[in-house]
Image 1 (cartoon, rainbow, N blue to C red):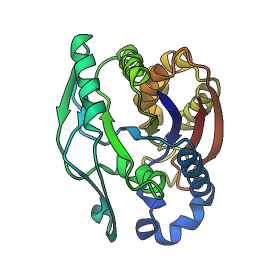
Image 2 (image 1 turned 45 degrees about the horizontal axis):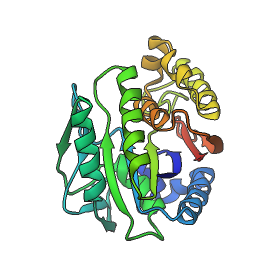
Image 3 (image 1 turned 135 degrees about the horizontal axis):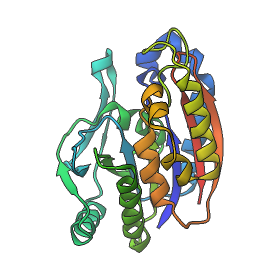
Image 4 (image 1 turned 90 degrees about the vertical axis):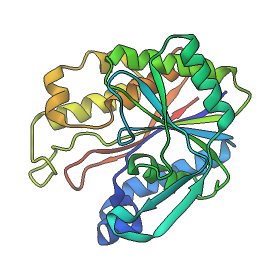
Length: 262
């Protein structure tokens, strides 16, 4: 069963050993993530399914990273001290793989010991007091938006049949073009996109995501769209309520933290 759902940013600047003095500019986001960690702990999950935009992606298939254990570290960002070891939930991985095969959903397995930062940053916060929590790291594909929603609905069926308490997290940042000092400079589509995303999340509106103008999507240069489509598919026809915990963009990139109460 699904016991928890959330949306988180994944900038490495949130990690103290990486962000250093910049961490003070992300106080709202960090406070929201700490709150989210407490809510996750209270939900007593057995496993956390996390959907990242920086894991290996395949053009024609969704994917899952399966390894005997996973390592979180931030050596690529100059932090040599922060690390954590987590384990996969083999039983849930097997159930997902079998179901996708039976339903003819394009799906494949990858195997990487070190998790991408899109997966690692949220897990750094969310597993702080749940070191034994098992994980299932997923990635999206190059398939259509509707196929991402379908993948989510197929995952929902697997999760609802499971006796495990399953937490689901969509990890990604919003527009990267919100100010002149943003990584990709300022683009007017950035603000419009982030407003649409907040609207979509508030209403858990799959139709809002599916109806977005392609030019808006391209101009905003976000990395959250596909994860949300999958998440909303997982939540389809469930009684849920969204709570926006924080939204800020101190570096010209939109960071959204939200909990979906299920």
